Length: 81
Image (tube, rainbow, N blue to C red; front, side, top):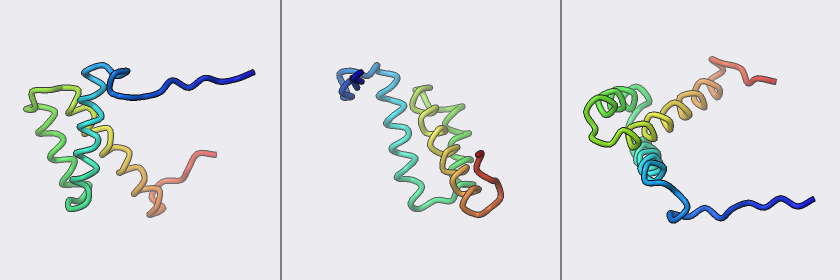
């Protein structure tokens, strides 16, 4: 049995997926000089005001993941077993 993994490139992604990826990348960059709380505030504004919903979703998705990582690292939550 062999598993085929499709190559991922911009040609294989929908426009919304590309905007989500851009939102995640920008949130990653912003995380270097902003706190999670600051990013959450920015994401709420973006969700309401940004003209591209997919971009805002990608931005928020990164922040949620980073927040969970931070909580796990600090011991505020435990990893599921």
